[in-house]
Length: 288
Image (cartoon, rainbow, N blue to C red; front, side, top):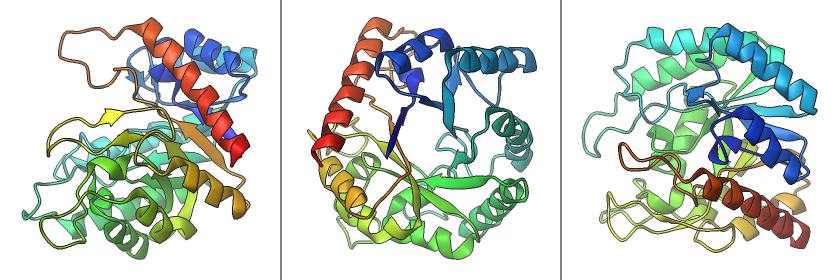
């Protein structure tokens, strides 16, 4: 297992993201946000500067954390936006030497309304094919998207989209209802979800949290192994099955992406908690 992380949760600027990665003694970073922009939205000049910073520090990129089809994009969003992101992502992935790009299956519509499944399948086939034609691997993350409704929905995507692989996020099931079960739709079970999709997983994201108090309420994010994400059990199972891929931390324990409008995160707290989270994850892996 190789450790990496979304270091934009430690800092906005890449220099400090690299510093956090080096403090942990890691060689890899999961590239997503730099100076408040996604890596596929940086200017050519800013992207090239970032590449040079990474190369100078000896830090490699484990995955390209794109916004393609993510939870902020509805399924009726102009597909040209997605195609543009793909066109920018492919050469940048090759420049960075990274094989995996994180994709999603567009925002969930309210349960009971038309999820436009066929349009989702059509778009994902096109997305995956374009990356595959470039020799790259598009991996879908279970998040607040169609595949995040349940493990059954994720497996439906696998059936409908040739060549698509999976990123499994340990924390995301904890705050989502299992829409494959009868009403009143229990919270998803992260261990059950993982077991159902395990054979298709090529990459792991580590979050941990506790069930929200109610629908629409933000969950309490905690350190790995302290929540209901079955982090220890999943790591133990991955080890027993000789998983040799990446484990990427995405802590969320310090407020970065969900601050109240107009507020600025406490970046020192973000940095410190990111490094502490990484060390806690190392201990879990060593003890598994």
